[in-house]
Length: 143
Image (cartoon, rainbow, N blue to C red; front, side, top):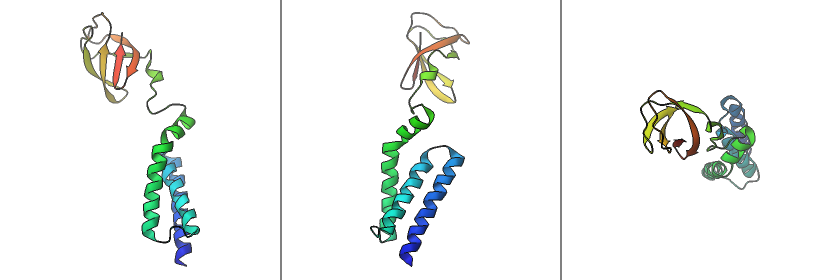
């Protein structure tokens, strides 16, 4: 009876995690839920007979699925990758301080700290609106 109860337990955990994903929208719960369902199936096949093996397999499947599929799943569902800043091109940002040619300053942009780089020969003044020309890592390049 122990064998069936572990299988059902992993099945319930997997389904609860997939259901929780509907509330969070982070895509992480999908990876955990699918991993739990895989462990349930392998337990049902009696390939993971002990709780220790089941927990190790669950952790391993979670890590593998996170590394392999998170960016792909996020791209498929939202159309954006985790490092896709296409919407930032051409956006304007208000300068917190004067910005000389080829100089840098730190700005708050979309809730995060960024390094703003003036790659032009033009001098920008504080509170001036400038357009983002491109993004290079954590740097916003203005011209």
